Length: 394
Image (cartoon, rainbow, N blue to C red; front, side, top):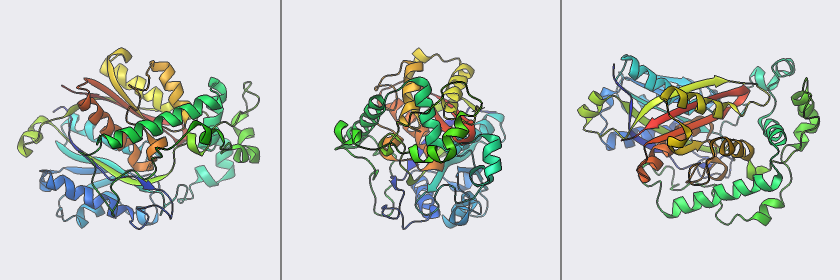
């Protein structure tokens, strides 16, 4: 048995998740194969890889049929590299990394490529027509409301104002723009389809522009989602719809891969371990408030690693709506320099299956930039799922 280490990390830029997006012309496989090629160019012998584990949320059509196995074949990695695709909704990418790390720690394998992919412009969310989204009786019995309505319920419960939500989104945009100006992503970024930057960043965002936007989920709420979310609750009696498109994660196309191996695998490849996966955790919570699960998973993973909040140098948390980031910031006392210091998914986009892998890779890179010791990444997902992971460096 060996300890799992992050040995390398690569990602595509994130393109706008619409037909106007710069990566819309590329199916998910064409986002993955260049990353597999990049890992080989950076020193990976693909015949040494025991498995490829990918997260993807909408496994249908172009994203069906086990993309992990298909991509390795298209990348000419030979016939001997297995592949599997997992679905933990928005947390699929970070879960793929956690699963790979656990298998390395068990001694079953010693070198795995893990990460995720999603082309939301070509295979939009809910394309799979799953009962959780489309069967009215399943939705009623599970209480799995729309995530935007859940975000507004959380904002209402936690008392975050519209101005506070706008302020967080503006901060994420400005941090992302500053990170791009400084070249913060140069080591990991692989240009794909002619795109060399995260397309959704809006460096000219202003408080006035954000304040002018209407609530994004009031209409969905009035259509019955508010009633469903408030069923069997004494408090609140009304949901205040405060999130807008600017304080919500914009859909994106993208992919990200992490190379994970034990010390022996790193030595064989001539690679220096960059950080150890110290612990991970998967949790499930109330499928109505749902978006609190990522924070719960981060807290559980920290307990497993015996790491306190005060010892953490950076938190990377998928910005599944501004209210949940403010909630985490308050709980962890993590200001702008500690929580998503290079911006997050509100600014750079949510490539659903890839987002968790981008969170882990971003955590790794930020730990290296500040010569930190512990980093924690987390993602909240639909139906009350959450995954958290602790990295230890040095």
